[in-house]
Structure formats: structure tokens, C-alpha cells
Image (cartoon, rainbow, N blue to C red):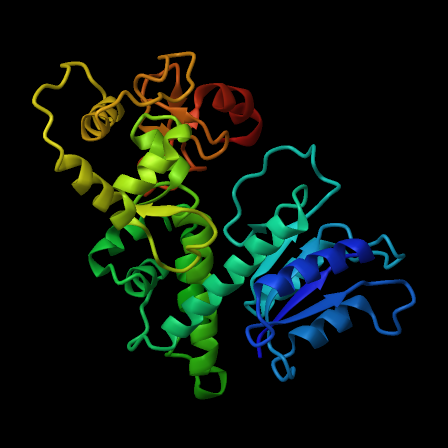
Length: 366
């Protein structure tokens, strides 16, 4: 059976999170194991973690969740970053959270970082952990059925989602991390000598690991071919208070692939087809795409819909979502800007809110 390993130096946190997680995941779905490192442990922390992650472990660890600072019980030198590094060496996904880093500067998006909410309830954190665990398990099961194996994460994601014609869109998400593609090929090099050639299981495990992170941390995080409910509201230039109407009209557009339980997600091309099917007799000459989308939905529902909050255009334009402030923005230069690195090229309805960009770009190189 697959295992989820929870690591923290606070017993209350460990017990609360484990209990909440067991209520979501059945006993036959995952084994929940907790580890509280202390100075009295007879084995070095690194060796203990290596034992948990060993290939011949009775219960294979499929997901690890760790706090950033694990020194509370005197286990000096043990930090979440150490756990992350060791997990990455064996291609095991790891979620990282911290109750002590609330005021840290914004960080450049990291492909292999899975953030677990630490300031919310145990139930909220457990829900995300379970959703991510199930998503990676779904990907692993599907990758086992792929033959031949795809040569890139983009090709893999297109195959996993049953959208082979969308490979080019997904490939645009990999341009931010070119080393992923080359590194993946190096690790699954079939031209290597026989004594160094990876096994088929190793290849599939690594591919599942990389493709899962690209899907979760890039494709689903930065709205493009797949959009969240909040991004869909921004695209239609309406307030999120109209969420029930969005769910109603776009119910056939829902995304049903891996990590579907992490967010409410929709296929953008299906959304566009629904909107295009609404016949607008007259469209204002200067109307933006977001405004046109809202007008179409207003015609469909026969009511005026609430606009997003914006002090620049009074919510008239919309059309884009800032993935950092999570607010609706529009194409106007005083409202939003593109990015030379922080937003993947495939995220075509993602733009950075101008105020956020102006404040942080000189320091962070956005």
C-alpha cells in the first residue's frame, strides 16, 4: 500500500493533520505515517528519512509533507529543505509548509515546490494533501499504460489528458524550465550502457514525477488551456459572486483529469465554444474580449452580472487573472503587464497586476 509521510516537530500539528487526512483517505487507499524528529532519536535524521524512502520499504512512500523548520525538539540541522532535496533524489513528491515564514518575500515559482496551507485548518491542509496524492497516483497509473513512452512532459500531459492535439500548448509551459526536458532525457537515456541503463519502472516513475509537477505547478496554476473558477470569472469579466451562474452554464466544460479536486477547473476551449454559441446581435466597437464575454453571458441569463472589483476601469474590461494577487486585470497598460519569466508562455490569460509588478520586479527580476 502507498504511504503518506507527515513530518513535523509539533505533536499537535502532526496528530491533527493525520487525523484529518485519515477521514478523507480510506484505510485501503493510503497508510498515514507520522514522524516527529527529536534529539533523542537513536538514528541520524537523514538515515531515518532514507529508510522511509528506500525502494524496498514495505509501504512505498508516495508523498511526503514536511514543515520547514524541524528543529523544535532539538534535532539540529534538520530542515524541510533537506527533506525536499532527499525526496527529489528519488522522485518522490513533497509538500512543504511553514508556520514561521509568513512574512517572507515573494519567491520565484519553483517547479517542484508543492505548497501546503499552514495557516488554515487541518481539514483544509488535509484536503489539498489528499487531492495532490490522488493526482500523482492517477498519473502513475496512466503512465503505466503509455506505450511508447512520450519524450517530453508536454507530450506526456497531452497523452494523459486525452488531448493529443494540445501538445503544442502544453509545451509552452516548459520553456520556463528548459532543463527539465533535457534532464529528463538524460535520466531515461536508452543509449546508455546496459549496466547503467534505467529500468522501465525507474523511467515511468521519473516521468510521472516530472509530468505531475508540470501539470500541477504550471499548467493548472497559470491559466491557459485549463482555468480555475476564479480565472474563468476574470476571463468573462464578472465578479466571483456570480460563481453559481458560471458553474451552471459551463458545467460541460469541467476538467476531470489529475488534481481535479485541488481546484474547480474548466477547459478554456470548451468555454469559448459555449460563449461563441450565444448570438450577440450588437457588440460595442471598442469592447474588450472580457466585456464581450460578459455581454454574452448577460444575454444568456437575461440579467446584468456583477463586475469584478477594479479601480482602473470599474470592472468593465477584465479578461485576465493575476496569478500572484489573484485579482482580475485587463490589457490596459496601467492595469497589468506581461512577464519575462515568471508567467509561462502558455498561460495566455495570465498577466501580472501593474502595482504588484512595479513594486517587486526591480528586486525579484520579474
